[in-house]
Image 1 (cartoon, rainbow, N blue to C red):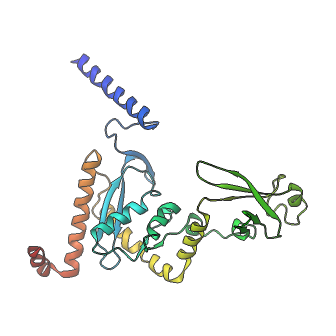
Image 2 (cartoon, rainbow, N blue to C red; image 1 turned 180 degrees about the vertical axis):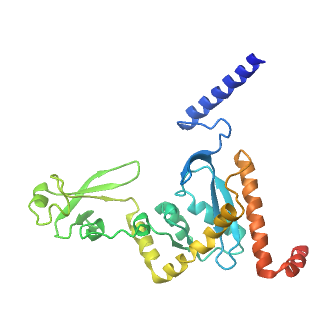
Length: 282
């Protein structure tokens, strides 16, 4: 029996090593390989990241899905697309918190004619821009260069092929060192440098779209809409963890929770007397 248990342990370790080598991960959960280590205010735990899309009118959960990604950056486009497949017509506007602020993800949905209302990290933290932040530098698209607030030129120097970022630097470091703003704009002896994102123009456009008064009115509703089911399930119903292992089991759990939440919402909206014949007619 002991030899049999040792053989099982050996096989389990070998399978974990194979997965580490195949995926490039630095750790594998042998109990549930499909989950991931995620950090929260309760600490770091083996977890799934529950995603929910909620409609504005009735506050029903349109789509719910657990994922293994520890953050939300790559989830916005997928979650909105999945919700739109369920709805009869695509949504007019889609909003989320700054955790979803990946420009490519947001542009995928915005390009479908859906107004995207998601703050950048800077906007979410309400950081005040200084007089020498990049936004005060003027980009000349024709000559591919920047001009600082004093009118000095920053020329293209390098390209990060991995992410498409482009670096622009002052033509001569002596220009910055002799400038009256040296020490505020930059303290580098090599002079001021600016990094331009691959999709900088898109990012600026989405930030401006979020700042519109009409967008702010929509965004104010986000907390009471999508945070409500999370708070109800975790705080009121005490669902603080999933009971099953594996993505399929966790998906089933979350679907049951979302369905129960929606049933109670519909009863509150229509009343049980109207709901029963409506369901019977389907």
